[in-house]
Amino acid sequence: MTAKATPAKKVIATTSLAGCFGCHMSLLDIDERLFDLIELVDFNKSPLDDIKEFTKECDIGLVEGGCSNDENVHVLTEFRKHCRTLVAVGECAIMGGLPALRNLMPLKDCLDEAYRNGPTVADSNPQQILPHDPDLPKLLDRVYPCHEVVSIDYFLPGCPPSADLIWDALVALVSGNELALEYRTFKFD
Amino acid sequence: MASFVRITLDDRVYLAEEGAQLVAAAKECGVYIPTLCNYPGIPPKGACRICTVLVNGIPHTACTTKVVEDMNVVTTTPELEAFRTSIVEILLAEGNHFCPICERSGNCELQALAYRYRVPVSSFPYLFPTRDVEAWHPKLIKDHNRCIQCKRCIRGIHNAKGQAIFAFGKRGDKVVINIDRETSRDISDELAQQAMDICPVGAILRKGKGFDTPIGRRTYDHAPIGSEVAP
Image (cartoon, rainbow over all chains, first blue to last red):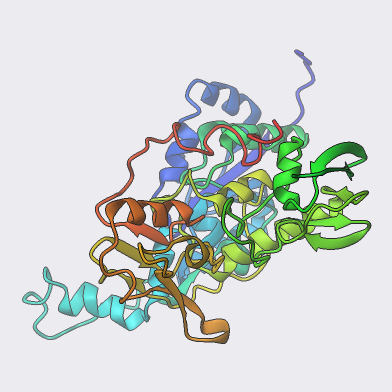
């Protein structure tokens, strides 16, 4: 199908909250389909093009990672405001993922281990200081899945979701067709 | 001698052994009824309810139901599938199920059911309960974070004297399944492996045994759970 009258390209924004960028790597892993993707969509706020703030309303927001600090909550809220469809991408966005392992213990224990008592820091922090610069994001009491902070429209599981799943989902969202979740690509690891 | 009776499964008539467990009889007929707390060869418990089917129109757990003549069984309706999906979602939210770091990932029956029903996320709030990992036993690790209290280990794993080596601890919503210090003292490597295998999730692990099957060669990597019964 080579319709000449091309409709306006869909606009995508992406971000990584409390994630590892593995889901973004998996997006890049669609390989040569990247050429097809840039024919279909424009990117707005995203680490891929280094646009720091939204410059227009977006059709699709891809969110990697859960909410571990107040900056994550702020960015996620901005995504919800500016994206018509919001997709939680990967286990961390969906249920907290590995960062949520800290939910199994008090936050103070984590900070003490990281900055006061851990074997690599015990000698180098004689004043027992915890980082408290006002510019640093404040940690939340625990890590929250994205859908417990804002409303999320779709969920793509995986750690990371496979490139094929991300591609299938993007094609479905851009074309307006229903996404057939294939067993092959529907995995939690 | 076993007598065979006529039963109806999803509008098709089959012959099944009278008194047999409905889950097993349906499997013989090539009809898949999902199970989680059930395990072939050990007494059924009816704990997880995921095998709920309609018997003559009334919900029954198929693992605790026996075959009787002229029973009319419906194994799949949109309501039953929604009910099963809810059970998977409740279990995923109730424990601490971190699939990417679990030794059982790819071979886990709870995960496989989530794949089968395409459950990417629980619709219940994730509870993140505080639970222990028990590693005192020389051959076994019990990770309470992953335990779904199906009790397969209690029912199915016994020492040479026939004593159960797993037992309940605590009560109510705090209930846990522990390794019994007395009866588990001298278990063989073989029994430790059986304990790990009987656990549907990664709550019982053999010490020193980690990620030994590559991704792509694990039980549920390519085909959904149940496709061994009804492709």
